[in-house]
Image (cartoon, rainbow, N blue to C red; front, top):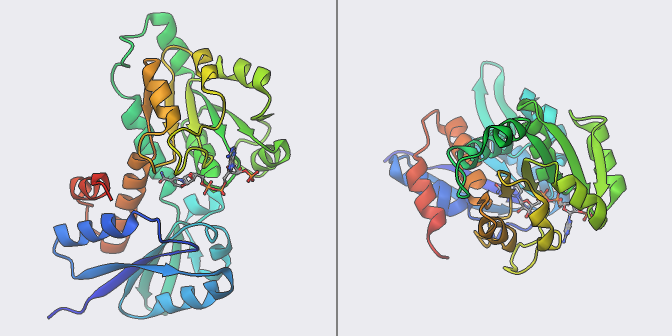
Length: 297
Ligand code: NAP
């Protein structure tokens, strides 16, 4: 019998994660003898956990809160995209001539990019845009809510798409710091609690990305009062990175307004698919993975 290989999730806590069922479904669909496990890792144990990834049975790992930045200094190599974002969410174990190397990647960026492309494609529920509206939407003005790791990935995507970007966070200093260290240096920062300024900014936003956890585990919570959604242009796109619940109050309200909107499951799926391909060298069985995370828990 073939040896069982291992991949897993390094984070603290990790019990809520959908990655085990998604990645295990992918291994099983392709008949790869591998198991995906949870490696709950308090910060003091991170270095030892990463060192253990050099063992021969390991394919690689995912990395989540709170280790996405701290892990960089423990790796042999960091891919350019992950360096740009300043965060690693996937580690690949590579056998090289000079020994085993651990290489850090960031698949949140291509994952979000693919999710955004998917939700932006086609005609919005409100109907086909007029020429003027089409031109307005093509300007791709992005507003990112939050100033943490997911916001950093959203900024990288906006940068790659050549979009103008603004960041709204509950701490203005955090929004400014994020913009000063990221690729969108010099862009506008605003306080999420400043309703008047937020309303003005929403009126000039084509793509709204919620990268705060507001709404996580609470179907009625939202990052700002949802009546302000009325200020978004008619053909704006709303992406909430929160995936539990799959449809947040923000997504429901955006859809009720006739906007294209999606929750965090597509990004979760596509970042996972990219990680799977890095570990196995094979195209990910995306539909098997999608089905695994779409089933009720
Ligand atoms: P993080 O690094 O902890 O950053 C969270 C950011 O949101 C911080 O700026 C924080 O502000 C702010 N925030 C926290 N609670 C808030 C609230 N109630 N109202 C307004 N702002 C709030 O977290 P992260 O890694 O960026 O993750 C953010 C969310 O994205 C989580 O829900 C996570 O599950 C989700 N996510 C999804 C995917 C996916 O694949 N779909 C991938 C990555 C992340 P303070 O600094 O002031 O606390």
